Image (cartoon, rainbow, N blue to C red; front, top):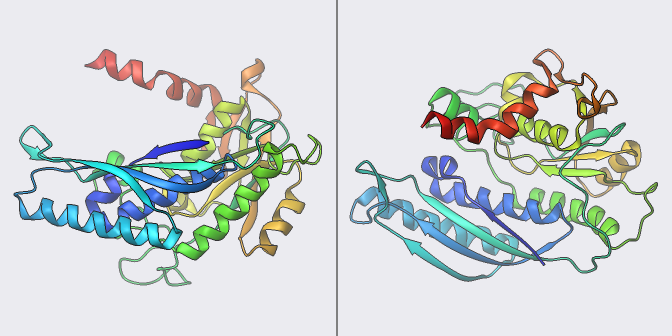
Length: 312
């Protein structure tokens, strides 16, 4: 069995109906990364004072959004609870539906690929890189191919709490997670040798966008990263759904199989051999945007919580 729990109050504060659907999509992607098929959902719906009309609207929209998403993905809600009248310094909390999703791994003989990159791996981005709501040329009033609404970059770094959430295409997301699940299932079932495995590491792109997903995989693997072709900070930090990163030693075969399943795939970079974790001077490089020592990223990853506690 595999279990994941997820929540995104930043998304749900903008659009509770669309936000909870995005949370469920992220949960399903998390399960796919360990080779599990989702089978059931439970929830904990956390809201402010339902006597306030806006809070009751948030609760109603969340329930409708979760219902729609579960029907689209074919999942039953088998339990849950509601926590109301939550506030912080007299202000209602943002709508915070927490979802727990149970998955089943049919055959488990080996551990799943890690959320990490390994030396010499190519980095493949699976899924569409641009929002379907955006004009192909990037035009359109208020519509971006790389929406930032509800993202960590917009809310936490810029204090921007409005906008239009990225659109979730249920069919596109299902194709992506089914493909990733099938790849990982080959590994966990022991069907592929180490040399033939297509997946050395896998991670969904969600909170923090491409930048955070890449950084987490690099830090976990103890390697440097070099990435090119990212279209500015918007693509780097958008939390556009239905995207996953795969580290692989066989990028051409992986991309060919993905395209055969209707899943866009593109090699965007590679894991550098100069490992900072082994005394080297590895760097985190996104061409034209970021060039940082891996040691700085590792320090931020491992010391952010102690630093915040010390500041309290």
